[in-house]
Figure 1 (cartoon, each protein chain N blue to C red):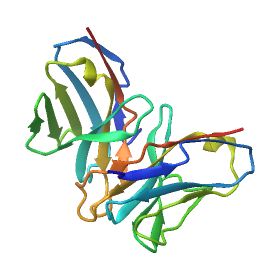
Figure 2 (figure 1 turned 45 degrees about the vertical axis):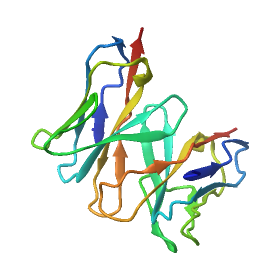
Figure 3 (figure 1 turned 90 degrees about the vertical axis):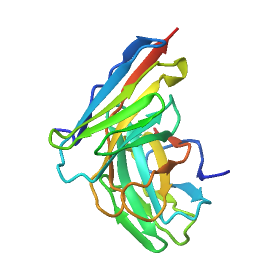
Length: 114
Length: 111
């Protein structure tokens, strides 16, 4: 069972570079979201999507773009990488419905910006 | 004040011990509550949802006190495999899951 798949698992970038973190799920989940996890901060929501063609900002959206052209895929783009974006990024998905559905997380992408 | 607060620990306990974690949340309109478990350098995984009446899943018991805005997790008969970070998570939205994560409480179970 693939579940939520994130690529790459590790990445090192230079300041100013751009890149896309990939996220795909095979569970036909409507809801997908991106979080970042930093020491002492807990996971914070960057962007989320409630279905194909619909995205919205979370708590910390600046410097990131997303799109949702299909139900399966939800890529996260860093437009111009900054050292403050060094973090572990998790993609998650959940079924449509009320607020008590569990989130399924990918393995994470560890990103370092030099 | 953080929206979800937890004691970071670590809690060091011997195998077989009972340990309890607490969590407080600030948004009184919060809709649903969870405990997630996160192993070192791994993704969070749902441990259990927390219901108003309290709920149990094997050795794990979760309690919710809406009046005090307080959530707890009790682990009985601790196992070495319970060593992990336990994340208190609150959903502050009625529709889409706008989850707010605590920073986690680290548990170390020793032989």
